[in-house]
Amino acid sequence: MKLIPTILCGGAGSRLWPVSRELHPKPFIRLADGQSLLQKAWLRGAVLLGVVETLTVTNRELLFKTEDEYREVRNIPSNQNLANRFILEPFGRNTAPAIAAAALQVAATHGEHACLLVLAADHLIADQAAFADVVGKAMQLAAQGKLVTFGIKPDMPETGYGYIEADGYDVKRFIEKPNLETAQEYVASGGYLWNSGMFCFQAGAMLREMQQHCPAILDATRACIAQSRSAEGKGFSQLELDADLFKQVQDDSIDYAVMEKSANVAVVPCNIGWSDIGSWAALGDLTSPDAQGNRIEGEVILHDVSNCYIQSNQRLVGAVGVKDLVIIDTPDAILIADRSRAQDVKHIYARLKMDGHEAHRLHSTVHRPWGTYTVLEEGTHFKIKRIEVKPGASLSLQMHHHRSEHWIVVSGMARVVNGQQELFVNTNESTYIPAGHKHRLENPGLLDLVMIEVQSGAYLGEDDIVRFEDVYGRQ
Image (tube, rainbow, N blue to C red):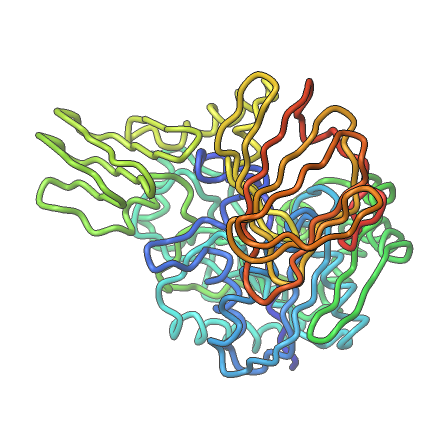
């Protein structure tokens, strides 16, 4: 069978705030080796035998960031010419619609017997060889028409996961997250597995089960795909789901919609070093402790400190006389939490979102299709940014009603449209964009363009922008 690793990349990762934000969610968090969870998920599937392409289901706003992540690691697998296919959601609708869209797309492209290997973009698997082995077993079951889930052999009574009661490959039942006493009984019995949220099945088998158990989701997704935009290029393909029709698709998980109802489900028990990295405590456990049990990333000075996880990639952190804390420092926010209550960080994220605070959505460095910008300083009627534009990339042709901009090129060369003028601005040169002028910034060179932008005006919000032309399809 053809094998298509299918990566579901979404969610907010609210328990890993302040590093995880709405537009920089958990899959993009970098681990100590420099790779992100998303890159590890892509490589995990790309290196398997029989893979013909990868498929990623993600938010439309994360496409270019995801492509950048894959571009960094695409030379690692032996099949370097592997094509990347994307399904772009306008907003999240849970895993059932995402998997429905993926199965319909794979069936149309590779036939109903092609096999999807559904992977979460934010999980970690330590043993790749063991993972490849269990995928082989899952594909054998999928060839028999089974919907296969991967069950993790528990090593502790975890209350944050769902469980599967199993007898060999047979699934007896799916169980919601239990209380501690029940979880202890499950682990002691040896007959229960953690529900990993990874799946393997033939496209046609999943579509038949969805038609039986959640036909409304399948039919609405099919109708949405029929009216959605697609684009093809060298080594990539993308399908952008129509927002109006996607609103009509029911929000539901694949577990509730199909797996718990189907009589055609199998489970492969796994011991693959799996973790869903569900909290700062779990992420901290990936770092080796010192003699006092502290796990440190970054420049940190300690005095009489024990059993703390401290991460700071930019600033020096000093800690005195504390224990059992999580301290996460980022340029625009700091988290201090009791290590035993790391799961409750999600409440901080929820409060920020409810209050409309930008810290739930964006970092001070914001990724855009053309590169990044970093807010260096802002005050009444002014904002200073560092802008980096990738080679060959350009911003939209745009205009601002309420602010003027001064651009100073630090390195590289810029091609600038400023009103009726088109000019080149070299390193150590500058230009001024008055409010109301149409303008565009482009990097025509082979190296990154780095510049400082000074905004001044009565209103400096990111929504003060009128786009006239945009190569990235933004409004």
